[in-house]
Length: 78
Image (cartoon, rainbow, N blue to C red; front, side, top):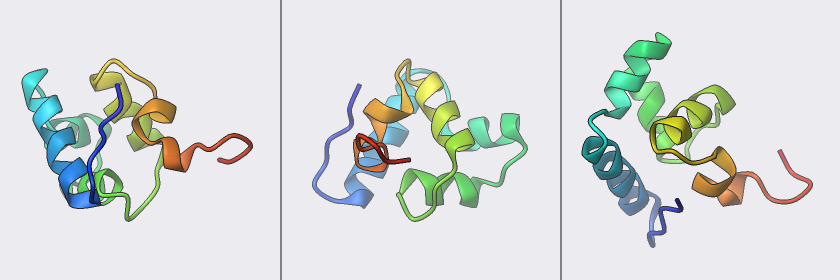
């Protein structure tokens, strides 16, 4: 699954919608990880990086962080 949108804000909204469809949310994932909702949103918006949060979001969506955030996982990159 790739969430393609023109802006980070649009992609963030699509990400939240996909999570809702699957019966969860960034806030719920954050609670399970013991991480604030603000931190979850900042990672979802692409303003901060956290491999742990990216992995948890990707797992909830049945995909990988590399597919969900391709710009963050370019070949030879992080």
